[in-house]
Amino acid sequence: MSRTPLIAGNWKMHKTVEEAEDFIQGLLPRVYAADGVDVGLCAPFTALTALIDSTRGSRVEVYAQNMHQAESGAFTGEISAGMLAELEVHGAVLGHSERREHFGETDAALAEKVVAALGAELRPILCVGESQAEREGGRMEEKLRTQVTEGLAKVPDEQLGDVVIAYEPIWAIGTGLTASPEQAQEACAYVRSLVAERSAEQAERLRVLYGGSMKPENAAELLALPDCDGGLIGGASLDPESLGAIVDAAG
Ligand code: PGA
Image (cartoon, rainbow, N blue to C red; front, side, top):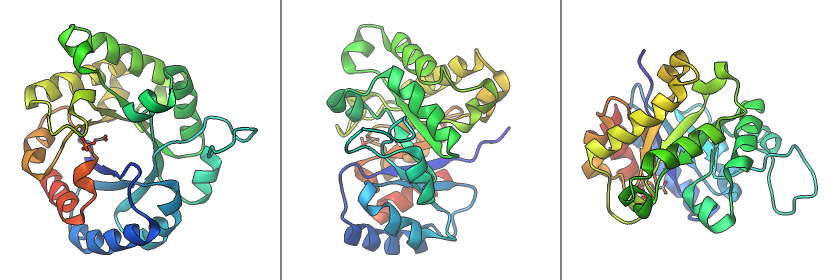
């Protein structure tokens, strides 16, 4: 089975509405002819509506960077799946390591968030990945097993392939250090094998992205890996030309 690669820019807490509009005017002509690749922008909540309007009819999908698991309730400052779906957002990044580290995001909450997103027909991009200490201590597989199995625990088997999993080694995020192709392939294949323990068919459908200092110079070799179906890109996604070059590398 061939999986359509997904190149998703994760803007984090960058870009006002005006800056997002400028960016999209640069990106749309840049990716217009890209064939056989999905392009996503994971933007701050405040820029979602503007991006949805300006990308309508284009190949660019718009994602939120977080979402609460409840339908509604006394959760000041939070946003539900239904609220995102109403804006026609395509999906949401869930469990980014920055949210796990700075905002106490847990695997138990993520299990709820992933099903809440699917229930609202949003595509979850579930982020997993080990720290430097965990890798050096030989605990990478254990960490990935916990994050993947717990994060997907409430997803019915037949929907597993609707989830996107981003393998992002924490030591490579924003550091300029990239996993070697061998390291990235080993981890992405391991993530897929964890899903295959529940359904081999869904594991074949599942897209596994690599994230962590992906840039135009290293994208082609990472995207050519058999178990890497795209990228989640932070720093290099802030400029339309550099995100466009990564999209080219995936096509
Ligand atoms: P980076 O960020 O590309 O800047 O390393 C990746 C991410 O955090 O998703």
